[in-house]
Amino acid sequence: MKKYLSVILGIILTACLVACGSSNKDSVNDDKQEVRLGKMNMPEREVVELLSNGDVELKISKE
Image (cartoon, rainbow, N blue to C red):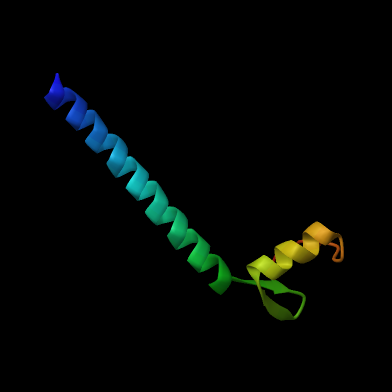
């Protein structure tokens, strides 16, 4: 029974570490991603902030 519980605990711990590691990696990359807005490139977080404030009207075009 102890071996079974230690295996389950190991699986849960591994899953938590993987989830935390990928979460931190995503947050670091968010600052580096840029979005083309009109004729300028802006960091993605600034574009999301503008859109959420309603300061910019979003028009999607195919290039």
